[in-house]
Amino acid sequence: MARVLVTGGAGFIGSHLVDRLMERGEEVIVVDDLSSGSLGNLSRWAGRPEFKFLRADLSEGVPDIGSVDAIYHLAADPEVRTGSADPGRHYRRNVLATFNVLEYARRSGARVLAFASTSTVYGEPSAIPTPEDYGPLMPISVYGATKLAAEAMISAYAYSYGFRAVIFRLANIVGSRSGHGVIYDFIGKLMSNPGELEVLGDGTQSKSYLHVDDCVDAMLIGADGSRDRVSIYNVGSEDRISVLDIARIVIEEMGLRGVKVRPVGGPEGRGWIGDVKVMQLDVSRIEGLGWRPRLGSEGAVRRATRELLGEGGASGRLGNHQRPRSS
Image 1 (cartoon, rainbow, N blue to C red):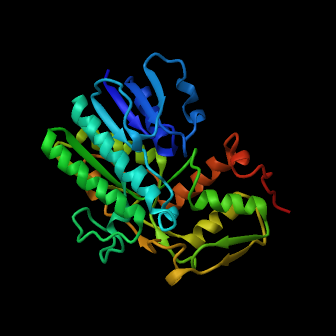
Image 2: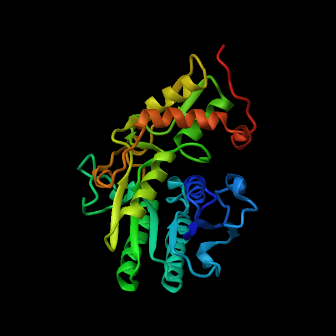
């Protein structure tokens, strides 16, 4: 039994990762400030002797939990759009928190640190699909910049202090327990107004979407299978889908008819400042370890929509609206 720390383990991706680690028989310690996560995501493990939850703000330090074998660092501000309005928030939660986790890794003797980074570190690459060795890396969002800064610190600490680091550059991850993102937003808007759907940007934004189950598979395979001091893996689907197609899928899954889809434009057709219009990652490196996504972008979006609509409590998180029915 390995002793594993999962930061951000009450959040969307983190809680799915905790489920898998617990099912594998690991001892799991979750540290989360619950700013975007929920204890409800971890309720099935409450009271188990091999599970422990600590509420803490990692920008202020890591609680003393003793030594661990591995760290999965997923704690971060997950909302890309907030960076232009409040860059300090991204710095505290994505950069300062990562520094404190690395200091803990250095002191605790952890053998491996796995980090959830992002496709936004590439900025707007000229190579699509984008490989891990693409450069120079020029993020166009504060979120992407803070994740790239965290990657640099992780690399330096791994080489300086002897642990193995695995960095996962994630595409858009979707699925149950998600509390942000385009699918979640579309469902909320349509629950409020089933006759019209506002779309940020011009709707032509085209990106890769991956179901959270495939994402967790990739993280476990990468953490277990990598051997270099620092390994970087793109994690995403093998295709991409437009925002307008996502709108169509959500409308279909909600059983609506005659919905007016209204793109509202934005800077250069983007949804917000820092929005990357086209994103698809080259995932051949992680596929070389034996991983492959089971769902493409459309399949992931459709399954995620069904999961969010079917979740108990989803209507409460989306504003206590009743699920619309077709006329």
